[in-house]
Structure formats: structure tokens, C-alpha cells
Length: 408
Figure (spheres, rainbow, N blue to C red):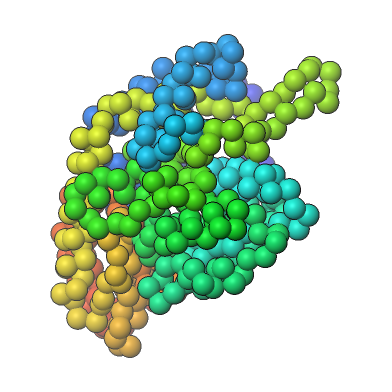
């Protein structure tokens, strides 16, 4: 067991210890990861760091003490609402990440409905955070198999609903395959049944609008779709802000009351919060605000262009390798697999991992999952070169197989 040292240590020694601790980590700045990180360049990194440090110790719970954070958070929410085509009167909350945004949305849906045995109906490609939210919140989660195109099966989801259904869910896009669910049809169903529709755009919220401007044909998924009640969108993903920064956006700001906690049941008086957090880091808000203002729409469009380029180059390269195929998709998610029994994809994954690429495995179908960001445009050819070598080695049968299901 390690105890706090009796005497303090100087920063240079501590800094060196930290650098040594991360020496064996995968190199995200070299684009060796396709999960966990989002990176553009050192200029944006400096903006992130300096903005965060400007508010590094301020507590966003205390907006009466720090009215600047109330203003910055409000502006971040408004920029997100504008991007996602929200109507007048919409509102939102800055959260620590997609999980909290989804938790709050499901809490609000439950509280608004007020039924005794609530359930939510979701496609089986929806993020497992919905199951975690169900576990915490006492919601039955009904996962419904998708249609053949791996998008929501509206008829099956409708059949799974009953009087206790408090919410429907669609993804834009889903994380396993990058497909956007049938949000327009879900919106019509939600409106007809009078239930909450949440769109999980944690991955796509700050990317899809700009892919559309580049000519990528994406179906409508945001507040322009009637029936969409709430959207979760991560600023610390393709919003390019540092962690943790996400938004829960609501068609009607009045719906915030359903995820608001308020109590006077102690000696101090009123305690109220719209989030699952108490203390909230002011630096996360300031950094998100600064990144959004620094990049502007032109910067986000450039990020989308780079991601599209990376996907195009990598997908085309994979298709030239005998035995491999890329699954259909147009977003930042790229999944490929082997259709040759003599080429185990798990063996390819092991060899790529040995060459310094963090490999995220797909379970169904057995494959390799990439979540691309702007930096991958710079390393696409390097990745393909190592993939060709890995395929050749895998065919020789020299490596063990990395188990499927190592999904992040």
C-alpha cells in the first residue's frame, strides 16, 4: 500500500515520474489510436490548455460567485442549439460527457412521464450507456434488433412499446457502425405516442452538420425533425474540446425541470443542480467556449474535410487488400473485417497492436473498428502500409489472435 510521502517532492522530479509513467502509452499525437482521443494540431492544443488554465480552479457549481462561467456556459449551449437547428425557447445543460448527458435525458423522460414501471425502447446498436442509465434509474431497457441495414427497425420498435414506455432512442450515428437511425420515423412515432425521443449524437453532433456541407448525404437527425425532444452531443469528441465537455440539448428549456434536483432537507438551506455532478470544473467550460470560438464554422468544416479524406483513403486502401472488406458507412466510424477463412482478423489485430497501433475490436461482425479524427488523414498511408504487412504475417500464422469484443 502506498502512503502519502512524509515530505513533499519538487515538481521537476514529479514531472519526470509522470513522463516515465506514460512512456509505454500508445502515441495519440502520432495518430496511433482510433479511439479515446481527438486531435487537430499544436495550435489548438495551446488554446485548449490556456483556456482551461484561465479557469483551472473555479467551480462551475458556484455560478453566483463566478457569473463569468454562467455566461460562458450559456453561450456554449446557445452555439450548440444553433448548430443543431433548435427552435426558439430551446435550452440545454453543459455536462461532463456523453454518459452524463444521456443519464440526464433518461432521468428527465422518466420524471416527465411519471409511470410506475418505466421502460425505454432502443435499437440494439445504441450505446451501452443507455443500459447503464437504466440500471441506475430503474428503467427497463428494451433493445430491439435493427433492420438489415443496421439502422432502427421502426415497426419492431413500435411493437415493443406499451403504456409504460417513457422514451425512444435513435443514434446519429451509432457507435458500432456509424449509421444514422431513422430519426424522422422515430420522431413521428414519438409524437403519435406522446413519448420522449432522445437522439444520441455524442459522436456526430459536432461533425454531421459539416459533413453535410461537404456533400455527404446524411438523413435529418436534429431538432429540424419534428418529435425530437433532446440531443446529446459531445464537445470533447468532434467539438475538439478537452475532456470533459458535452451538451444535453432540449427542444423546450422548460424540460430542464425534469432533471433538476432541489432540496432544503438539511441545515444549510436550498441546494439545486441540473447535473449529476456537484463541483463542476470551470476549466472545461472555458476551454469548450474558447475552442468553439477559435475554430469557428470554417475550422470545423476543415476538420470534417480531413476526416472524410482519412476515411476515403483508408477505406479504398483496405478494399485493395485481398480478404478484407469495409462495411458500408459514411461517417467517422469505419469498420472492416475478413471474409477469408484463411485470414483471421484477430491475428491481424494482434500484429497491428505489436506495431504500435491501438486496435479496437468489433464483436459482431468480428472485425476492426476505427473512429477517425482529423489527425488520421496524416497517417492513413502509414496505417495501410502496416496493415498490408500485418495481413501478410497473419496469413503465415505466426501471431496469436486478439480476442473479439475489446470495444471501447
